[in-house]
Length: 430
Image (cartoon, rainbow, N blue to C red):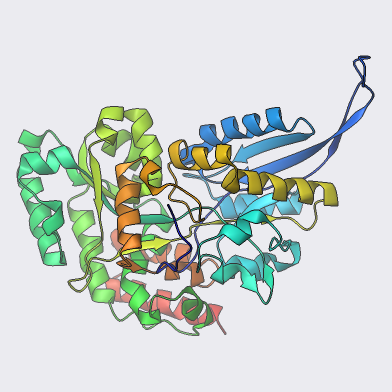
């Protein structure tokens, strides 16, 4: 069973989920005994996680069957689309969701006036120690953890085995480079297009996840240190370059046209590449595309300075909108409690969503997929790295991603790209 223990987590991400607004719908009486008109509370969920869209919608229907006085409407914006911009547009239009997603301290600052204190929920009481750090102000808890996630290089075990490459032996960038060169040298016999599918079109993949591995030590793995930092040292910028260059050189081209969907669905899930830099959240997509391949995937950390720590954190938090009416706020809290603390919800979290829970009371043996199992093992052993990207200045991940795109396009040198990103951090924190 999961116990309430401190994980080496920084809390929370990148892009997110939920939004709810309320409304009341009058239902006409059927004329039967005990009939009459009844009010139904509508909870609009505006969420970004495309990987579990259909599973989440099905679970919402299950909740409605057991709670006929509540109507859960789920809208998903994510993947190749910009959730953060879509959420701002929602707010600007006046069509505000009652549950929406925030990424920790940065978004708490940005959306503070809209955030309801959820410290009175069962879910907040069950949250694992450390997972609420970046959404807590005094006695108030302003968000509920989505799950735990981890990322690194997701790889096809069969391809690695056929090439004679042992993923467990990759402990340094030198080891990774040798493994990549071996795979590349056997492309034809392995039947792959390239070693990597490097999604250079997406600013976030390297702007936050990739960069985190090479920036975390500058802030002692603490999201709050990063959040409070006026400048960024970027002491491992050259190692970061080596990592970016390796993927770019041995990727399906052109990388600047390669997006998340192509990376995960068209290339990795069809066996056309050996590995991608992604996290356990891609497993449901891989499973839908090829169930047999899904059982034969693994994940290993990005090697930095001879260390292989798995970046593990809380990627998003559910926030309840203070602008929703009281009935909708109450219904939103009850739905989130049910999602994470009821037997039905917990079963879905583990077996349908394929989540690594951020709450106590779960049976770890039921973690369903190999990627999540590996990440949980790293977390349980404390061999993790904090998600400091959640403390980056607002929008800096995309800014860094844009500078990297200029570098990949040959429009800027590496030094120019990094210096520009460092200056943008400083300007944002003035």
